[in-house]
Image (cartoon, rainbow, N blue to C red; front, side, top):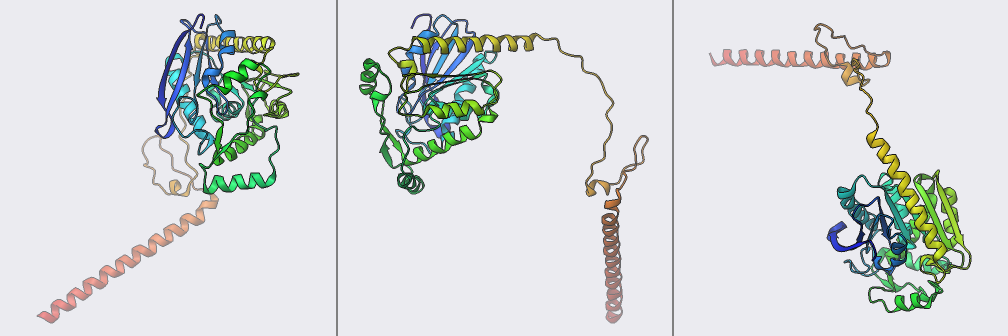
Length: 369
């Protein structure tokens, strides 16, 4: 891809699962974009946004989640959605080891939007800006109560029980080439486990309920004609977020994969511009913090502060120069008196026992004589 050097590799995720990743690197990066893909797909389906960011100086990283693409693990199964988050944490830590001073933007699409949101809630200091594309916080199709209950039972007793996602490829995009490529992609799968389903629903609800905790720069966008994920979920999450800089865009007439739509120029331009802007702002702030003169540290005399616990109050303080006698509070006097009384009784009892033993010894000695 123009202006990028392509790399790929693997790392070991949670529990020893091998995770595959791709990287489109630039020689002098100004920032990092990490992409979290959707269910059943992989990190190689984001060529459009990567092309839109070409010559921007942004390095792009895209792992395949466990159970997806070229990564290890059962297809579409996860014990907990936090496993995705922990894998991503390990990956981002590896990136930061090499490029720690660069701002990082996390982009999550669909299921990846839920993962990205959970990551931002769990590790907010790792993310300078969050981008949510058709985030799967609220499914568009209402699942019947009996089916939800059955799914919960299977999730508990047969967690790896697999079922079809029911995702219709024609509802991804209006572009027939995108649909055709998806249907013929050997790395795409259409199965998820019972545990995956319950974790997905639970995690989506958590993202909405905890959105108030999101304080980083936030971009949320969604297609209004999305038949897979309800765009109103994105609206609610956006409304609840505490971010000072945040934008919401709901595109009329577009399906689930807005960046892969037939008419996607406006979407890609908007997303690329917002990411570049977020990188520029964050880099200047980080640079200012790094170069700011350090304030001289004022030397202050340490004051010895007595702990409030009773045990500390009972400790003996040496009467050396400068040492102060520890004061016992009124409420502690009774406890101290009781402790002293008990100690006195124990001493008396010990003395009595010793005397009794001595007397017994003398009597024995006399008898022997």
